[in-house]
Image 1 (spheres, chains in turn red, cyan):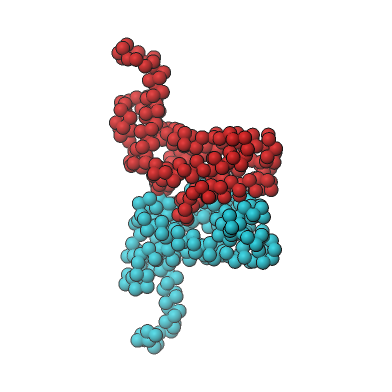
Image 2: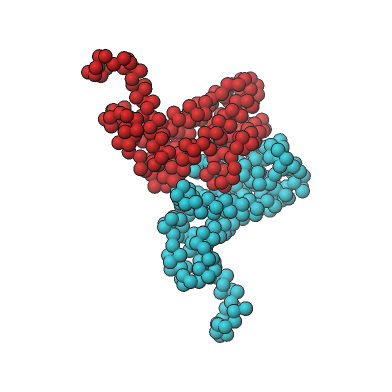
Length: 205
Length: 205
């Protein structure tokens, strides 16, 4: 649409737009990890991404939308939804990639900023809520496929199952400070599967 | 030992000491909830407790020791270790009192300050770790009694079971922002028992 620029520019507008979006979202994650949510500014994100501030405002309107989309995108890339053919394989991949991303330097920094700013910044509660809704929604097919294959009871609540899988990892990282590794992920898979098979994760509870 | 004081004083030294300690610990919890960990000072705690600053320094040496003991004492009072005669009854009481204390105004304030200051204050990591070790240690008899009664497999790891019980409540409060109530507590009990009975919480894993 915005064709006022140089006609010599080699990339089409759509490609330019999606590259711009990717650069801005990546810059937002980097800024969040570096300075935290409260110190994040559109100016710094724009500078890091090499775009004009107005480009960001035009595309995201609000600062919080940008943060929410950046976080969702970052974790969606880092924790892809697997399809290994078995529920155990899928949950193991999910839990292990969750552990890997949350214990990476960027993951730890994002976790720290999200938790540390939450008490002072009410918008962060909304961002976290939307973020987890998005995360759970993306992973629901793992559970529905398992039910279809007869691996889990038909009354399994997918979101409750995904919460049960994720909770121990987050609990250790944010509260007890105990080590988090692949053994944590694998234990969580066993607990979650046992609970689902005993109908402790049913949606009719 | 320290009998140099007035012999006319009506209360014995031990009673005086334990009343002083209780007042200081209660004042510490109130200050933590009111101003947070980073703004907490021994002066303010002393003022609130009606004691001299030097009394606090003499009894606790370090500020962090005071905070750790105050938090441990507060939650030990609020989440007593039950002995109902059945593992299901015990875990339900534990989980429900955990929910009640964490969702109270003081509990929410403590949670917020502990999480929000954690990124900036390395000592808080130690305090949290010690706090959870203390919490888990106190509740271990619930699990050992259940094993003795034949309600749980002998290979059950008590601390792993207690983590599994507590994780979903903390995950919702600190991360997803979803409601936390008695249903959350009861669901956590069912998940934990199913996992333990399927040997997913065994210590030999």
